[in-house]
Length: 343
Image 1: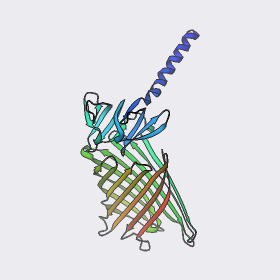
Image 2: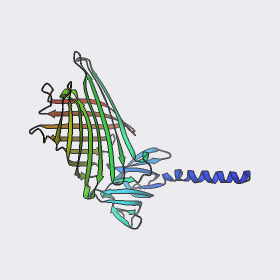
Image 3: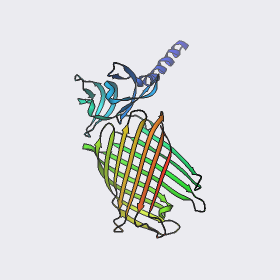
Image 4: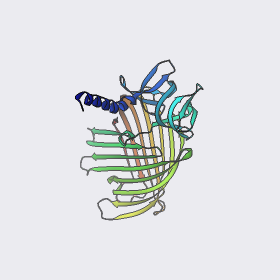
């Protein structure tokens, strides 16, 4: 093969591999004010499209400011009623609608009813999102020092979603032992029709204030998204779990059967600054020790002051009316501030 032929083969091969990369950012968004933006649609959630562009980087566009959307890529499009369509995005003959073009059928849906759009990703890393948070406080008058490190990762598939989050808190006080609280949680969701879902949960917890050296829980259950709009989400689920508790400063442990009821409420306000309010409430009635109930409340307020970097105010409260250790406290709470970086 001559040098010229080799050069042509090399150039053609390079174009073959480069073309898919260059073609990634060909999604079109037409705004109501007449502007047009070209880029790659990353997702639609909580009333905003996240769009990656060559010239402006990643930008967010409010869904109600958009007139039309066009993309040849395949998306998962979810309506607020829980109906899900799969297909590319096209222009409908009706002004208030958009077309979802499937392999065999096309559907026209009202844009106002669309609450979520996710590209059908090809690789594991493309389907992964997450965040990391760091909080540190020092109180001069009491000498209390507190370090909180947390993070989460979410893997989003077509019918499955998996998430893992961790939170570690260490508190140092004069003339007292270190107080530690650590949580590691894994959840797997299977999406069903009409906003219903099945779920499996695994969690590891430590709270020396409540006399728990290690609590391991494994459970399964299901629930429903009660409210799902462009700026709000309310979902509730009920589970059955088996729990093994290791009592602090002791070799003793016990097993429990629990019936957790968990609720999540999230409110997203996308006027500057971007504000995100998340409230998690979990109630754990104990089936093994009648009358014992655990309650956990975790509330967060975040506002974004730099792209992908937010300030956070976090309130955490937990109560156990019958802790396994007679010397342990019945409740524990934390009020903290810090920063969150999302990737």
